[in-house]
Length: 131
Image (tube, rainbow, N blue to C red):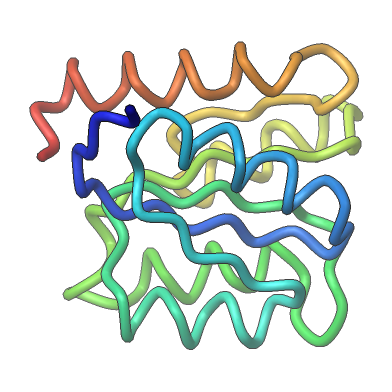
């Protein structure tokens, strides 16, 4: 039986297969998972659902992840939500830009298995006393 922790997480990822894979992994760990397949919907869900953590891709339709991150960090009600960038963009300039805009971490998809991403999020939640 899945142990529910009721911690809401938002996954903003335009690759439906990958988003569903991450959704399943997090749900198996007891998270309440919300998904958005474009930046506009992701930003809307952040405001409505107030997730404890956001996993955000950078290459997205409608609004790219940098714009979404910037908007979250400008909003007084949302700015403290940890945002983990999960992307295939691995250029040093992209990493620096993401972190300078306020991302908590920058993960390159090809370097992490979904289970490792889940473990990182769980560690973040423990270390930040989110629950």
